[in-house]
Image 1 (tube, rainbow, N blue to C red):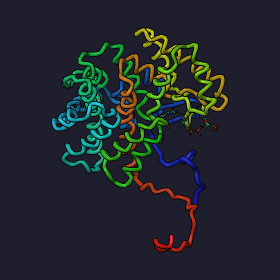
Image 2: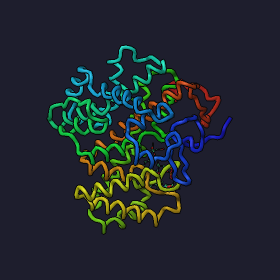
Image 3: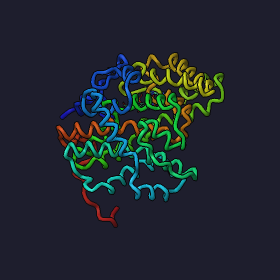
Image 4: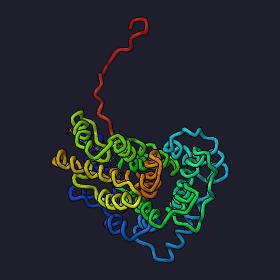
Length: 376
Ligand code: SDX
C-alpha cells in the first residue's frame, strides 16, 4: 500500500500525450509544442485539433474541423427557452454547469462511449458552451439573444453573441490567445475530476459537468475572479505594498499566485502579461496593469524564495477586464477553453481505462459496541 499523500501531491495518476509541464523551469508544451509558439502562431481551433489528434492539422483538415465546430454554435431551441427562464441573478458558472449537463437531454444517444461519438459530443459541448454563456449574460441584462454567425471563428462568434456587434480583430485575437493558453494543463483538479467520472464508463456530459464544478473553486479556475476583486480593492499603485504585506501577514492567499506544480513563473502568465500590458494601454486601463506589476514586484521580493510566482490567473484578470468582460464571466472563460483539455482527457481515459478507486487510510476506532439509544 502506497503512503498517504494529502491532495495526491506528487502522485502520478494518469499518462497523457497532451500537456507537458516542467514546474521547476516553467515550461508548458502541448504535444511537444511550447505554449509561446502556439500563442503566437496558432488559432484556438487548431490548438483543439492538436490536443485531440496529437498533431497539427493539414489545411483541409482544419477547414473541416472549423466547419464541424461552427455548425454547433446554435443552441437547441429547448435550451434557449431554459436559459430565458433562469433567474437573472444566477451565477454564470452555475448556469454553465447546469446547462452543459442539460445538453445531455438534447442528445439522442448521450451515453455512447464510442470514441468517434464522444469526439462529436465534445465538439457539441465546445460549440454550445460559448453560446450558453453569451445568451445567459444577455438574458440577465434584459437583452435579446443574438443568433450565432458561422462565418466567424470561435472567439469572434462568442464576442459577437455576447455584445451584439463583431469584435475588432485585436480584441478577438486577444481573446483567442486566452483560449489557447488555458486549453489544457496536465492533471489539474478539474481534469482529474473529468477522468474520475468517465473512468466509471459514465458519459462525457457528466464528466464535463463535474469538471466545471471543480473549476469554479477559488483555489483553481475561480482565482481569476479573485484577482480582479483584489485589483478593485487596491485603490492605487501606492497602496499595493501595504495591501499585499497585510494579506501575507494574515496568511491570506494572494489570488493568481502559487501553483502545485510551477515553482517558477507560469509560462502562461508571461504570455498573458504581454497581452495584458498592450490591452491595458489600448483601452485606458494602464492603472490596472501597473497595480498588477507592482503586486508581482512585491511578491517577487517577499515569497519568490518559497517558489510562489504568478500563475495563469494573475494576468488573465486584467486581460478579460480590458476585453470588456463582466467580472463573473472570467471563470466561465477559463471553462470555455478548458472544455478542449477536459474532452481530450476523457478520450484518453476511455482509450486506456481503469476505474479510479484510491484507498483511504482508516484512522477511526475498531470493535465498538452498538449502544441502544436510551443508553447513550
Ligand atoms: C490554476 O493545477 C493546475 O494546473 C491548475 C491550473 C490549470 O491550468 O488547470 O494551473 C489553474 O488553478 C492555477 C492556480 C489558481 N489558484 C490561485 O491562484 C489561488 C491562490 N493559490 C494558492 O491557493 C496555491 O498556490 C495553490 C492552491 C494554487 C497551490 O497550493 P498548494 O500546492 O497546495 O500549496 P500550499 O497551499 O500548501 O502552499 C505552500 C506554501 C504555504 O505556506 P506555508 O504554510 O508553507 O508557510 O505557500 C504558501 C502557503 O501559505 N502559498 C501562498 C500562496 N500560495 C501558496 N501564500 C500566499 N499567496 C499564495 N497565493
